[in-house]
Length: 324
Image (tube, helix red, strand yellow):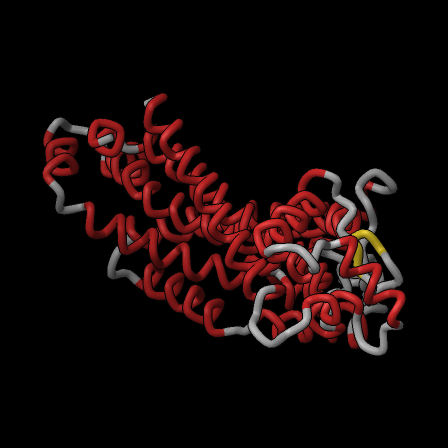
């Protein structure tokens, strides 16, 4: 197992190197484009252009440029946005990351608990009106775009019914740090949590239900029932644990993608200053240093999540551990 983990760690480092090189080449090594002008921004003075050229080594060979950029991003962390008056991009991401992590972790807790409950109940009552009703609710959740659902939630909680007892506690759009006010933090995020979780509840509950139904006919499930175990115990102890392999795989990828900036629409709709909204602003302003930093931030989370998922596989499925 230790050998498999070390091998996966080496693969992770190699993948991150490949992603960083590709991102650098796309943004700064495109033929016919001056990377100095891209970083300095529109209407930059000749003095600023010369400063950027020397600071980033654009008058030196391409490998040196790449090494300089990675050093500024990961070691010295002084990669600056000239579009934003020389603001350092790494501290910007560091300020935005807790907002995104708070949003995604809360939503993930909701969708994991709700989808396991819905999927397991639907599988246990296969073919009944409960099964059909839960799967219909899941399909409705999948069909609603998060930006539309967010706008509807804002219309209800911020405008139309804000003065009623039901939603008078909902604060204005924005974010309250947990360290400043835990209750304010919860109130500011509870509606975004639910909105972001709705689609994933639908997806995960349907996937889990399909896995559990398919596993019901497997030999180990029939053997467990033949030994006299109750259907509920067979489903929860044997079926659910086996289905967790697929569940964990989906969760790892989705969680990393959301933390890496995939919650952009939710953050924009609810005015949350997270990584997704920061990326949106960088794209709007063509702020290439900030775009590159957010892309690398996202890539790191996705790659590390894959590594963690592989490690969890080793614990959940002995066959994977034996094969490696």
